[in-house]
Length: 130
Image 1 (cartoon, helix red, strand yellow):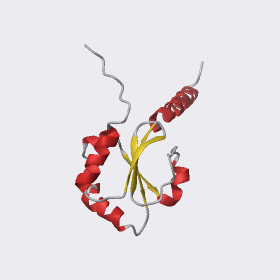
Image 2 (cartoon, one colour):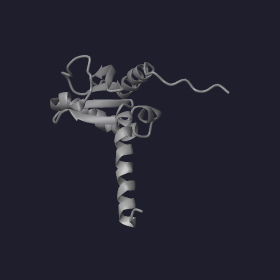
Image 3 (cartoon, rainbow, N blue to C red):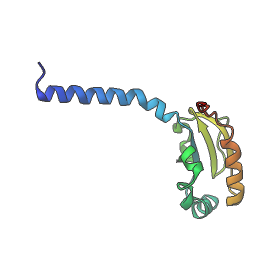
Image 4 (cartoon, helix red, strand yellow):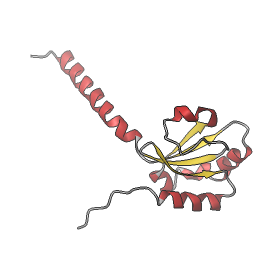
């Protein structure tokens, strides 16, 4: 019979193991990766015009935002279709692979239109028919 402490330790170990199994599935979810760098005036403009509302949108629910410094793109863990050269560059990622990208920021209207086009390329599981 396990003592109380041993039971709690075994339970904690099982929870950590289960989290480790789920972790790749969670990291494989779709996301929007913003490659940026300090001093980028277009990044600052996106941060002013879109940044404050992005997390409140339907797009953010589908594509949570992750920010990566352009110098760290290799460490970002994304299979990119090519190197990111300009900032900001927004890469739609699904299962760790690039689906498409938006290079630069012209206006909020242009950004939302291009993002919606890229989001439409994601594979969505079909909903069960009733």
